[in-house]
Image (cartoon, rainbow over all chains, first blue to last red; front, top):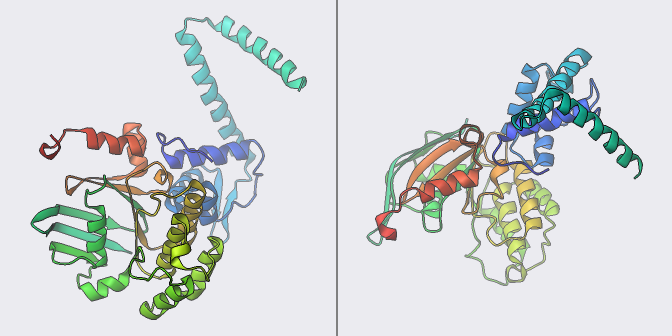
Length: 126
Length: 238
């Protein structure tokens, strides 16, 4: 994958793995590849992967089992919380940008509804 | 744990200062980018760490060891193979390494050579720049040492070879070893670095954690490096 060199790499690795967990590409209880294997497939340093994993372990999304490796948590509550955080993060970026343009809340909601309807239609046509 | 302690290193050659007052402390199992313009002193610093350049003032200790001979056994330095005749086949070069370095791991070399698709029967003169560098990397990583020094492994190499070499570094660098990679073009290796050391005007002007640079300054490694070089023009350049 392509990294943004201006953003800490460990943070981008976390984002990639969280996205995979929320999208269901990595299932609850699934074993993660070994640290070195993750490093090679992402073309990053082993220590950077380790730092990303340590933070995810601290946040409860990944469970480290001694001698067995790292696993996606089976606690769906934790995954839901991460999903909510991620949605909030994306929405707050969007909201702040539109709010800065003095667009009021109702107009933002209307525009979003219209956009999703159109987007849905155009995606169906493909 | 591997440590490299450099204190007050000064090096002159032919009355010219190559390095002045270099102090640097590296530890752990890191990959460190040694960055600087051509002629800044990167290669000299590597040769001093490897023990192939001598007569510098100051000290260089590897794992607390300052003796030149024992230090040599702790360091694997990418050798550009200049000492071999152009018609030497790869197999002969490998045999030479096996004989000279007791820590040379034949099985590991074979894995690397297979991964990088090196043909043992080819002669050095017949190798493209990229293939030659793949051979150098394979030979360097096949030694089991505490320190690996790779001197500009990517200069003039196509992007496919570069990716392969980067992958082989990530796969085969022993977990507990320190690796220093020098380069003057940073972006191609930025994602694999733990730390960067920047050399300018014959001395170390910065030593920082790579993700800290991104976090603290919101800058890419390359922009940070270029910023340091633009800061204040030295008198030599005017």
